[in-house]
Image 1 (cartoon, helix red, strand yellow):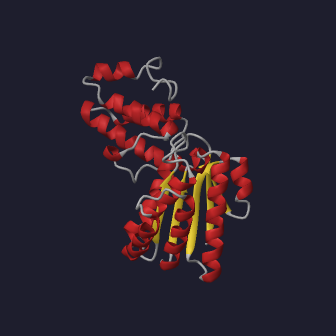
Image 2 (cartoon, rainbow, N blue to C red):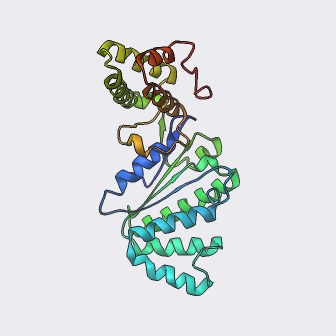
Image 3 (cartoon, rainbow, N blue to C red):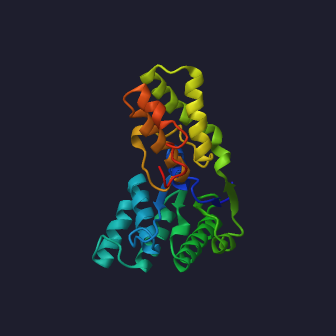
Length: 264
């Protein structure tokens, strides 16, 4: 397996959901300590190199108590437990990685940082990968999840790149939509044919642009950056809330169903 992987998507394909699912699965692998971070455009606490360093280090410390002495030592040196200097953060992350046997770091939304910032992030983590794996092969692996941007693609030209399209996960979206369909069917005693017609119409309007959703509870969804998947969620929620069959039929009329995410 390559030590640096870039997963690129088009907009509205739910890259944050993908990153969350990968994080969840990697955390189940006993031999890996996992650190991760979600970048967010326009938020200084989530779109700078220092923010990434803070977030990744915090996750690694939670995953492995051996790192606490390093954190305390950094506090004694800097006089502040909260990292306020990039250099301190860089040095501390490098020290943490030396303690850990196998580490996986996942950074979502690299494209949501300014170009110069994402260049700094790629440069730092590329260097860390080289240093750690020169010392102990396979000890550090990095996954960047982002939309396809020319500067990111160029900076990660030597990394394995996985390009994902919304249609790659359409089968999972169908299953998810049918779960909603069965809920609505149970409320209004719909026929199987009517239920399938509802599911098909909503999927057609969503245009298949979503992420694998079967692993996400309907009650635990975070409605951020989900693109056309969010369309499905909003429409099915509205249909599910209709009190009578007449209300449901009215909402299913072609001129009532939202044409896209903005209408939803």
